Image (cartoon, rainbow, N blue to C red):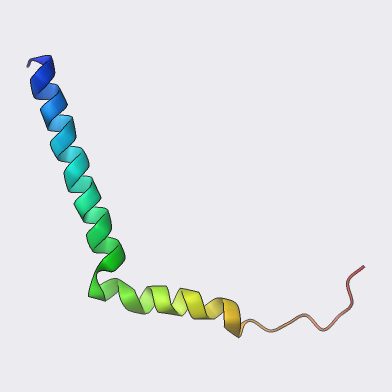
Length: 52
């Protein structure tokens, strides 16, 4: 295997990994989980005790 073949293989694998991450982040099946995580910060109860 030549060096250029190895470089081409790494480039293709990197591109496929990038596409996989984009699909994971923007896929319709991920939307519910991300919305739940975004709202969880706002739904937490506030601490009523005084901090010092």
